Structures are given as structure tokens and as C-alpha cells.
Length: 214
Image (cartoon, rainbow, N blue to C red; front, top):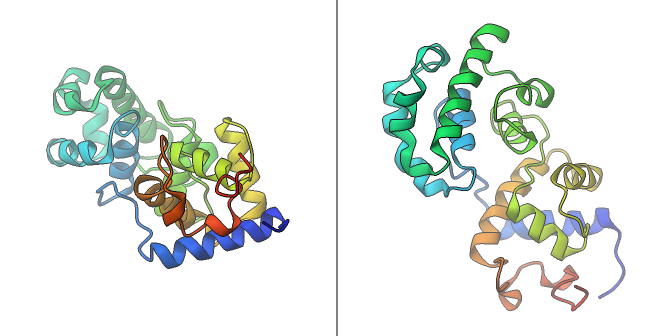
């Protein structure tokens, strides 16, 4: 495999995944910014499919940040029990909703800096909301992103924040959000954690792992 710059590798990866997965969409179901914020919090150590089974009842019962802010934590717990870590998640949802009401006039804020002041919200969730809702350049560093970008050869670390800024340096800002959504699809279908199917991979020609470099 010829030596290529990180920016060129990023361009090749973006184009390959765009061709392989034309639809770059978030797999969580939501209709407004608050719902995406809450669904993403629920998705921690839980599958998106499970979250999508839980949220319809939750969002039918609590429709606004004010509804969640006034809710009993135990009532939220009852709706999300099957998501795992439900006690912590329920507490965070009520607390973040109060923060949104008191600090942001009931509206989900639109910057990573503001979003990460909310209970239970880290940079991964903040990037997802900023990218999908507010259409700003974002890099969502989840387990698929960490694994695949490491195998491709962009880094050899696990620190999500450092990886985010490494990728921001090489990705086209207009492509970064969709690129991260496509990494999730590719991680589920081909570049799996235990046994990547390199022979099926659209990025094998420029991937260090596929070339035996990892």
C-alpha cells in the first residue's frame, strides 16, 4: 500500500463509504432536538433498537423539557427500565431537562460547549445533536468510530476527545457528520469488533489493518 497522507486517506474513506451507504442517517428515532438528546443518553451501553422500542411511550408521556423537568425520577425510570443503567439515566434526563428550562429558556442549546454543561451529556452526544439538529460540522466518536479509524490508520489511541480533534483536522467539515453515521453502519455490517470482514470492505485498498499494518 502506497504512503498516503491522512487527509487523502480521509477523502478516500469519505468517498468509499458514501458510495457504499448513500443514506447516512441516525438510527435513533426522534422528532425534535430534545428527543434526540434524550434518546442518545438512553443509548449509552444499550442498542439503538432497544431505545427505539422505549422512547415512543416515554415521549408520549413527557412531551416537553418542562414535562421532564417536573417529572418524578421514578416515573421516568418506569418508562426506561429495559435500557440498562436506567436509574442513572432517569436522573440525568430529569436534571438535564431542568437545566434546559432554567439555563436555556426551555430550548436545547446549539453548541458543544453549552450541551456538555447538561447532566449526562458528553462530547459524543453533543456532537450528534450539533450535527444532526443544527447542521454544524461534527465528529461523533463512538465505539465504531474509534475502532474503524484506528484500523484505517488515523491513530492508535482510545481517547475519544483526542480522536475527535484528530479527525477534525483531516475530514472535510461538510462531510464529517455523515461520515460518522456511515462508520456506524459499516461497523455493524463489515468492520466488526471481533472479526472484521476485510475481503468485503470498500476501504480495504487504503486500510492499514487490511494491509497487515495493525
